Length: 156
Figure (tube, helix red, strand yellow):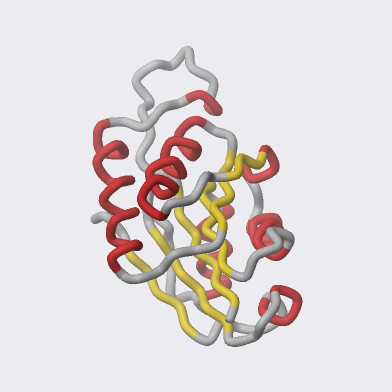
């Protein structure tokens, strides 16, 4: 079985216009939603083998909450910052594990979730979690066919 979990970073703080986009922290809602969504994922019994995260502060912080809850150290990947959908799927396929959680950004997250859910997920709001499962044993096969199942959860 192969599993991809997409997590859009939690809500970021736009209060300091001087900050570079890469350096924006989470706001209060983001700091509340990230641990709550991580706990909901763990409560559902889903524990990935790895967490890959964009290097942006808001993504790293979100990934940190998921990592602490799931007992994993997130691996930071520069190429996930602003990555398009195909690059997100390629990162999962190249992860070396069969179950991976990726924390990254829109529009790539929404585009990939929409593609994999055949339009069932039209938007990935901040801190949303979309899970896709294939019965195929490896990423080469899994990424070539539709997922057997998918689910979506959002803090709102």
